[in-house]
Length: 325
Image (cartoon, rainbow, N blue to C red; front, side, top):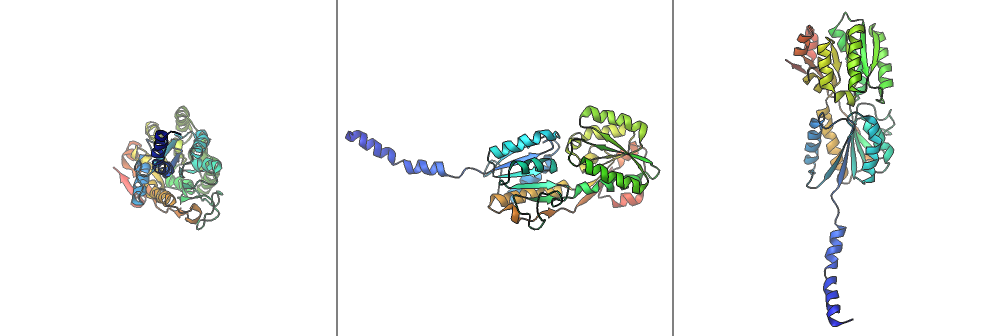
């Protein structure tokens, strides 16, 4: 080897340690954000998630990246979305609602999953116990799916003369069978007839209200991501067809719906961000106890009540957490 070539080789070798160090520098951790809803109707959840992440030291684009996947109420998209996040080797998955948690859990047994669901995660087989979840899942439970029957009671309190109530369900929702069974039991207890209607397209929602007008006097809308994304349509149809209805989230009442009763998403969701941050710092999901959110909100929209020709009983108004005028 010529002397000049040997000197150039040595000069190149001087840069090797720096290059190797650059290659071995840890890459930015990535959060997989898997949601059964759409970004437009989840802006408050995303904001709460970001705020909580910031409180534990993580900021999107600065020291953490986030891969968002939105199913927009079409649950059949979720398995492929979950598999894609696993293939991308995200550090942790934040999965909102049971519809997203199931596919995420099926896709990986090693990547930590932080959930926000409305049911009992032990009965659902997601964790072995609330205090010591074990495995790769933990998160927040609002037990919201247990509130369907309570919504029926509140509607009956507002409409004591009602004899038949409709229950609008999404047939693709994994909770539909159990929700319907619970509602049928509650209806029998209250001496009501329950008419179950199904819809999983906007056209089917329109058609359901045509049936409602002729067969029932009131409506309970199932807790469902697809319906939540069509809350403006549901609230407008209820007013147009003079159908008193109750929903699961405050957003419906804000959109012009009559009443909502359910867990506070903005109260529960920051915990998902906190737990996600703790996982990024090295904690194990199996060691983080499932948090039980207990804040339940009753919201009444008086403007909608007036449009429907209803007067809310004073005891019901007195129990409301918020009255929209």
